[in-house]
Image 1 (cartoon, rainbow, N blue to C red):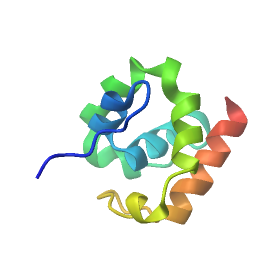
Image 2: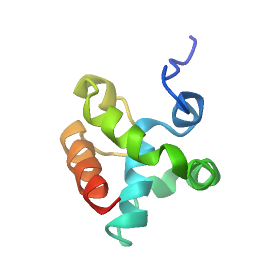
Image 3: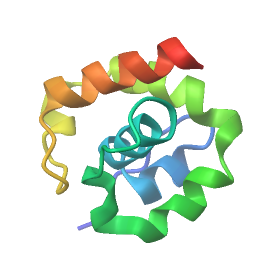
Length: 93
């Protein structure tokens, strides 16, 4: 089965990280250093670090996503948690 790729600027990189993982790491980076759901996939951090120019736009796009798609993550976050974390990160950018 082919992996869905996000169809916007930097979408390939966001796809490689996963939207929920990205939000989880951004939350750790900007809001709460004790948050650690993202640690299941630590290698993705290198993609995060080289894509800062997209982060605000990605967060805005994620907040527009269908919550059902965010429920497919494997790091244990609900869509509601992901959306709330994305809003908190956006406040700090």
